Length: 460
Image (cartoon, rainbow, N blue to C red; front, top):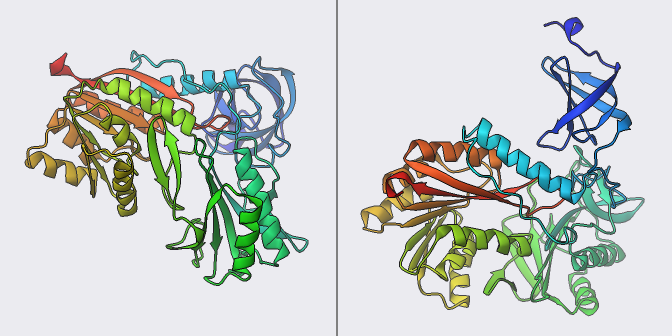
């Protein structure tokens, strides 16, 4: 089909009805079956759209007028919502977000997993879906001689200066603002990624929701940080809850936030927080869930699905710092955790010790290599739990699970599409997907976590 034959042309105005949302939050309308993606539009709405760009199989448009609003549309409470790339769904009411996220999981189960009949439950949301993030990491820039700090504008590297983020813990906001002002006072220059010069790249804060302890991390290009002692002194005088101030050095030309070298400038290397009854030590570089309230909801569900009686051997195949492993160890006879990141395994061992848990062992390595090795040594899992990155499970690991035949597999996922793909592989290998429970860990964003449980068919 040539561009002339396409049903829409660039700069044309069309009246459309929106049917769906894309995975990045744009409304989807169709003209003669030809999709147009339009930011800030919601399913069920009718409106006028200006066609901005036309490709062979789809177009992008701009919403000019809304003729009929969705029942779920709301005015975003954040003043910089339209510029900032941090949230994508503040114009959709929280009730509407939960409906959309359940639909998203259901659709990929049917389309990618070919599992249209698997029950996908209503999303477990938050009573108060604001101010939930316990970690802030904001890039630092300069404007008119002063320091600015905030999130990047959508699809750009322009920093939107920000005083408050409505999904961030208030204490993190306060600390970021104060650190920005203190560093500005001592004339610390922001890092310029174009010229690869300057000092301060990012300000990162972590906050323990239960303990109230805070950590400040200054990510710098250079090891030298002018007026280091004065900056530290001002931070601790202003914020008595700060227990750790750390400098991370990242001298590379990269958009990766953290570098390899970390120095404790003041206080402890760790702060502490609890999820349920389990205590965790959190360092500057630890992976720790950013929404601990919903993490407990997610892990409680994983524990429920594992159906542990105290007699089971459990393998946690992507164990990170041991968060799920330690939850499982409360009810299991023995838990084995494997993780490819050595620092995470060190954290996991420390966390097990911190909680006096002796029925859990951790090993560094690729799950698809370590688990068959355990199997050869006679370690047979009754339950395998996986919580892989967005790309899903390695094929070799899925095959290992199929060969090992645990009674149950509990799959914790941050990406519905790879979850559906992997469930299909496990189904073809002799498992039945019993149910899927989505959990909203990141309100006002497009992300949705899910927990699925599979049963070995010969065990039914």
